[in-house]
Length: 401
Image (cartoon, rainbow, N blue to C red; front, side):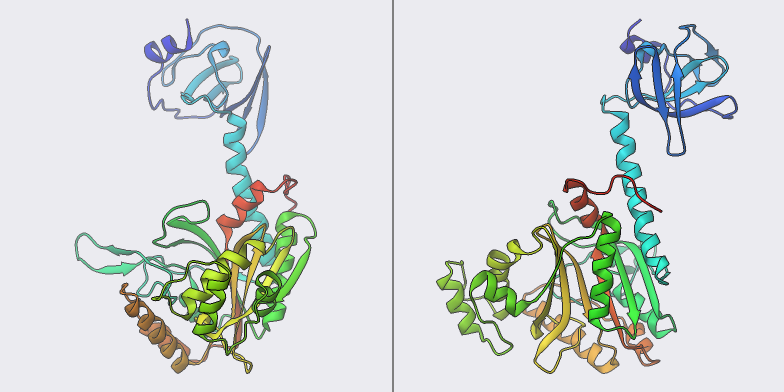
């Protein structure tokens, strides 16, 4: 009998196993002459093939010959009878080892991440998935959901920022959350509609202290000391584009720079459009090559909810690694009136671009009236970092807990 005949004539979909006594359940990880290795997330079992006898089980049906098994098949192995029962066939013939590796790698990556944060005194909290306001940034598009019975609408969070800051106003001081977030972006290698975000906040810390902890985080999750670099956005423009960017640089200057660099600029472009055209084409591709790079002091027009210093720069930084932006950090605005003004400012930008405005969370603004401590916070694309680590030769294979 071949495998196709067994599946057609003897295997039934959704076989049930009321008791796992006497059984080892797992996936076929390796097939060798006279031996099969089974694995699940708890343990592995190496089985020496001693017989080819057929057994009928009341719930699982007919046992399958080991010679018909493929890597990736999910089986129940009867320890005393030494027989295999097929729970779920691997119809795509992919390697069972790779299936478990993907699952285990992500699980271990999350454990490493949580170990780092909790070993440094950060507390995990959980914020809502259905929110009144998805976020403030005008360039981030959000998604709405609607209840089928009541018709009530909510937004899906683009980050947990607003609710984590509510927690700071309620007495928490050092917190983090690992959360599913949603953005209405076109799917691509670095953008997914749903992704996993890590965000953490430190009350009474400086932005430099937080940057040091972010560098330590990269060392910890990758399992080795990473080269580090810090440069301001002004220095990055000078090094990679030969331009002297200052807080007083005007739109006409940016337009002239863009044209001189051969960048496609449009009459409808505002200051930020021109800035990003130059940054994305000439600067960003050079960042984080072989090192974890912090870029700080951004233009004030891109402050979002970050403070602006006396020189006129937004007190925020971004982290790049392997040429990809992975984190964004602010010295947070904690003044209620300034937060309201920032929301209005960002929504005006949305209106100017004829996109939907973001609802304002009045509860968030009210919570700031109770006193949000001075704080710094960082949002890190956890799923993006994980995928970058998979691409890097020599990335951590065996996590240390």
